[in-house]
Length: 504
Ligand code: C2E
Ligand code: CA
Ligand code: CA
Image (tube, rainbow, N blue to C red; front, side, top):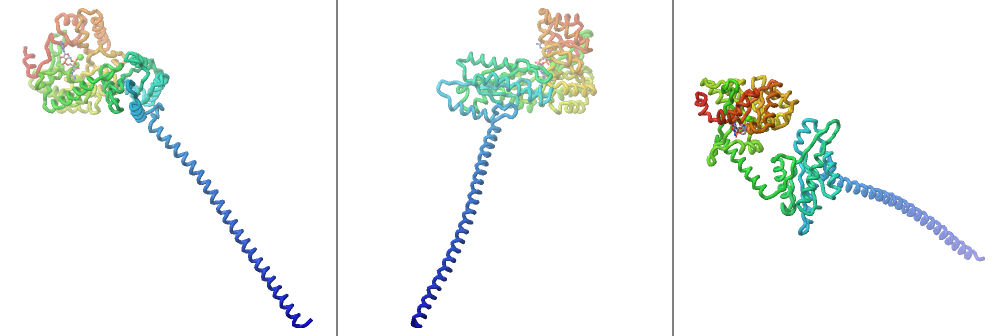
């Protein structure tokens, strides 16, 4: 072969070889890059997957969180609408329920709402302690639940010792009254909690929707007014609301503001009624009795204003006025040399319970410079029993100063020997109601005799009030009653008439 042909072939072969090598290198590079991208893709996929997993987990956690949140929102809502003690709906729950019920009412439908308020619940708390009070409330709640829910009625605890019941299943007033009475009777059944056995009564205010109100606020206000009436008319009863109730309440509020003005205008005056020793027939004391000199109505007696004054708390300044005025007069008479007797001043429950009561009495004694032995304070059994320990302590303290105490209206209340033994009183006042018929009524006679025997046994003095005739006085003397007070001797007198009366 020709040399140049060989060279040519070799060149061609070399070129082919070079191209082959180049191709291989190229392929290698491509494969390497592909591998790299594949790896990168794999990496990306991996991190995407991780991210996705993380997101799914976060989503799950978020969902759980949401669920938790919904649950705790529900829990919070439930707590906000539930009474922690009885697990019944609370006042907020009650309000919402009434609002929605009133809105959903159809023409001709009627619904009764009862405010069931435990009478003197405070006494349970104070005598047995608050946790005992809580147990009692739970038991009342349980009884109501049993009775009310089986009727498909609604029940809530709307205040400390107040429950609300909503009744819809009744055909008329009579049937409704029977249902209410049944509830009251069930609550009145004896309680046995822990070691103690006791009884409870309730006062119930009743409103009817829609006639007594078209929303919760008005219905509840009227229900309150009805309950208030049940409370002030002796408790242990139910009272339906009617329009005259709100008029009476308005009149009462008007009376209270009149009393307030009368205190400022010094329109109150203290009268004094003599008290007689039945053996010596001498005047041995006076009872201070309050009168209101009304600019239009003339002299008004305490029965017309004391209850309103007591309820509004105005009795506290009014009672302080009576005490100061009485002590000032006593001092004046003494300085003028014609009264050495004891002066009895009536106390009201509110006044006695007032935290500063004892300090006020001491201050007035010091201020007026009277001899405390000439001051007698009249309390009632219910005032003493309201908080027996407090009463004993207060009486004891004032007794050390020389002040004495009489138990007013004795015989009309509990007349329990047990507290009588513990209370440091000096005197029992037989209530006028026993004296009224003492000559005709055999049982009143027996009551008077028993009170006198009881007083003698306990070393107490007895005074009978409301003595109007010589026959009554003779009877009292025959049963060894110590003292008497009444129109037979004198009506309550103005201060200006005392001197003349004593002279006569
Ligand atoms: P009380 O403490 O039982 O007073 C006796 C009441 O019987 C007095 O009525 C007196 O005027 C009346 N009375 C006395 N003897 C006779 C009588 O022979 N026949 C008749 N029919 N009545 C007689 P008053 O003055 O109307 O007082 C009524 C009640 O008002 C008192 O009953 C007392 O609970 C209360 N009260 C009077 N003054 C005050 C006071 O300053 N503070 C307080 N908290 N209550 C007072
Ligand atoms: Ca009295
Ligand atoms: Ca009395």
